[in-house]
Image 1 (cartoon, rainbow, N blue to C red):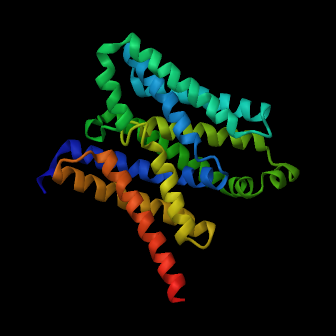
Image 2: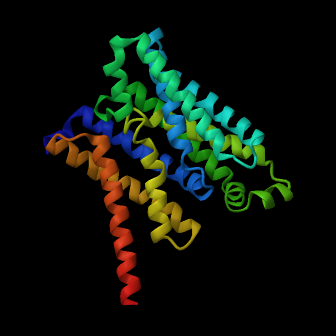
Image 3: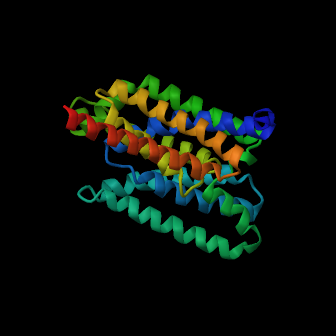
Length: 269
């Protein structure tokens, strides 16, 4: 297990553990509000920003973050314009993100392989700047969720009641979109844009199977994500596998085990 003493693995572990807290926490709120596809959308838009960052010589994750934030604002605007078909806003922004990313790829063919690492993840290449960005995002997300957990709980389970009670629904919707954009932009170098939604959704799916209350769900999503991140990195490091893909496959395995366990419990009961 010499890999545990390697600096690149230690940075990967720290980055993975931080994202393993914030991504599933936000994902729980998104899944309960039936907005799970927003992760894929913002991830695709972030890749367009990453591509532009390489093209103009600016820190790629920072440009990806700007793009994701712009997309989160656009989604909220479109959700208001299409109230009856709110999911249409996600489809529109995703299509635009994919189109822009493909356009930028053609302009900078020389960095295509580098951008590809952001699509599938390259957690072993995390540097100190990346860890600082991820750390700041983690602190911001945890502080805001802690300060507004009651309001977010009400908004998640009954948005109309929240509005009637005077809660600034638009503000909290925008805040959640911005926080999601921050987490996704920080996550794409860890598990990749194509897999980042797994960290947002699969731990939440596990909590829907195993947890019996919202408090238990919060604990469950973080526990599942952290177990998958730690075990995935160790397995990938020892057997030279893709870390992002290994983490996601472990998340799916945990979900399947929980589903099988619930079915057996019902049969025995």
